[in-house]
Length: 207
Image (cartoon, rainbow, N blue to C red; front, side, top):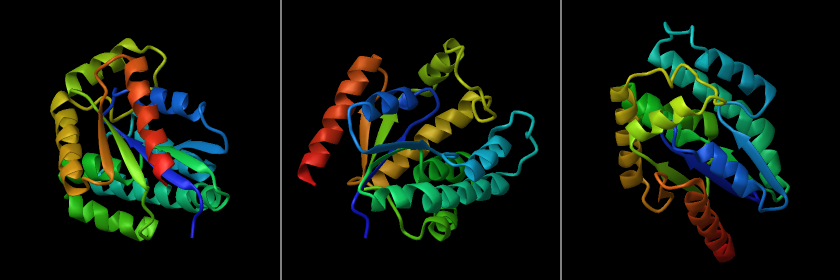
């Protein structure tokens, strides 16, 4: 049994979740801030393969399997040990990303990608997930304006793909209404941060 708290952060590209999660992490002690795909050496190597802009020939199923493989290693090597130590684990993306991006936007099927990931995570799910919602057009505008941001293969997908990603997340909110909590990410960084920190503090107070 884990004694820590596992919180994941989701959202379409350009929603600003990575900025917010870093700000949130600064407000807590005994916290682990990590990301997917990545977080540990093996998973970061897999991340480089998945997101490399030149890997345009990658099959959607290959993509989904690579994400699941990176997730498994990250969970076993980093997340579970941190939770066992009683840490607050804040993870930038988790299973829901695969369901929205590969399951829905790539057309592989949410249930099919869910099955792949159940093998990888063995029913290990976050206590709750914060979903930063934003119109794809605005998200892509933010990406283009942020010159210091990593531009990866998924960022280069067309608008229709990013619209499908958002639709996928909306389906997930319907499927997991008690776990996934929506925050409007179209406001300023400070506005979104304030909503996020209040939500987390309220949840932790009830634990």
